[in-house]
Length: 191
Image (cartoon, rainbow, N blue to C red):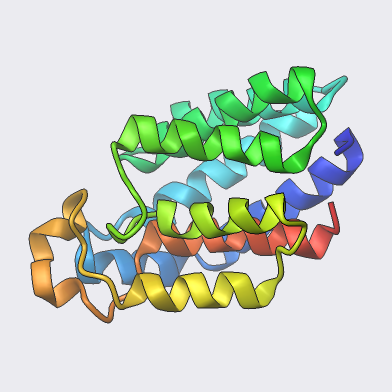
């Protein structure tokens, strides 16, 4: 991973978050408080601006800027979760350019922070199979589509979505969806 490749990937993710703002908020209205799309789009706009104004000399510094901006600009659980992931990724990127190791560190931090495990209908249900696929050098759209479909059929047991119990089954999880966009952008950017 180099700075230019990483910027291309992040730009594609941020653009997708902005583009899908209404859709993500609609998903969140069904099993949450309805603000995921607005929060993620706000974070995306702010982070694009922060990255434009601050030249990062390496991927670690770039991830640090992303982490700090997402934590300060995204409300709810998503800011701390995504911010913590990028913070861990920044730390790992100081010593490794192995993409699987970098994303595994992000996943570990998400799980620590959110106390979530696979199968609970959260962003972990996208991150976990994506990281496993990165380790096997086999991340592709099919992996993400399968993880997304499985997540949709789960009953939410974490966060605000858990209040909806059985009604959450069959509804896409907004955090899983925004995470899917992250990995789709990674594939498209060919990092």
